Amino acid sequence: MLKKEITAQELFNELCKSGLYNEVGEIKFELAGVSVKISTTDTVGITLQSWLKQYLIEKNYVFEEPVNTQEFPDFYLGLSKPTEKMLEVKSFNYSATPAFDIANFESYCVSIVTKPYRLNADYLIFGYTMNSDGNINIRKIWLHKIWEIAGVSERFAVKTQVKRGMIYNLRPNSEFKRNVPGPFKDKDQFLYALYITLIDYKGSEFAENWKDRLKHNYKDYFNSSLPF
Amino acid sequence: MLKKEITAQELFNELCKSGLYNEVGEIKFELAGVSVKISTTDTVGITLQSWLKQYLIEKNYVFEEPVNTQEFPDFYLGLSKPTEKMLEVKSFNYSATPAFDIANFESYCVSIVTKPYRLNADYLIFGYTMNSDGNINIRKIWLHKIWEIAGVSERFAVKTQVKRGMIYNLRPNSEFKRNVPGPFKDKDQFLYALYITLIDYKGSEFAENWKDRLKHNYKDYFNSSLPF
Image (cartoon, rainbow over all chains, first blue to last red; front, top):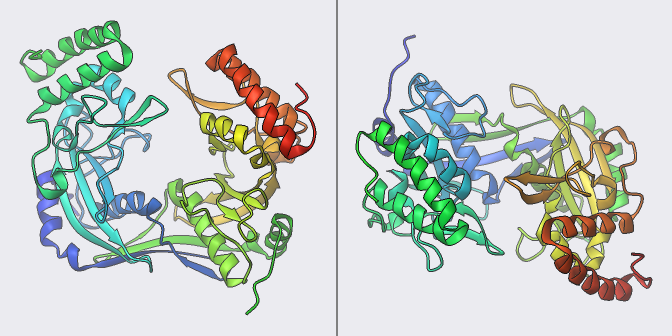
């Protein structure tokens, strides 16, 4: 059967129309006669990602994964042209404030210097609830670019997870959950916030060096100059 | 029905005798008519922990969990006397070298200063395999103290996960998988290796301060002096 091409936007529209919001899912594990319905939310994210992969397979859509599946992105919707059609899948408990890891902060900063096209990746986000019986409901889904889900915090120009003074991960804003625009209106505002955060966190020399290297690759890829 | 007390050793013996090694488990998720057998190993650890919890419930054993289930330990086998009967559950792919996170390095160092009894916690470790169909087999289980599973590395006196020069987690030795003793013969040798690692990583002042504070609580709890 001929595989079909699908864009992130088409996939998103299809999922929205599919009646997904009325369905109940559950994660089950049985071993040695002891059956468990997994009722902790820890595994929901990775499970929804596996579910989406199976969905793409059963619908016969063209997609690929990175050779190392731990790497960015979760899926390429198309035949591996690594600068296009990158899809990241994120999930969060819809009863709470979105608090998933968008990406490791330092890895992300380093990677967009040489791969600025990663700024174009689409983020498909599942907001789910799980009741005490382990029943999972998809309450809402979103499709966004990274600057639409990134946020600011009191401490840094981008919202991050900080432990003992060390920045671990980029964390999302809370506005997108209510369909309200976040603090960044485009990728450049987001990049500028990363730059300011790097000055604060790694010092000016590091940040300037990062910006100089980004500038070069940015121009090659986006056919315009980095505006700061 | 009266709940039964069980020690980590008794639980371990019971699991060994239960024929667990011949059983096949699978993790399934169904949503909107798309069923997935989860065949990535990411969720196996947390699933086995859920399974063990259900096992304890069905067998009517006394146990408790910390109020915040993300915290140490995974279980108290007994009614919460937080200095005793701490059980941590770890899992790794038996086809590979053990590479689970024993604990966050800095959190662990900080926590044993005020809670040296955490050194007494038991670690129940599942070695599993998963085939390409997502069938999970428990291949071996172990019960160990932290110094029996901790290791050394070329870079530091304890084996750790290091990314861009930063220590993230304590990682296990590879010997325990073959039932060969690891590099530390007791808790004090392990503590000394933490101390040396702290000197290397955080500097002497930090390490001496850590040792001084540990010394005090160590004596109170173990009724002996810290031997370094």
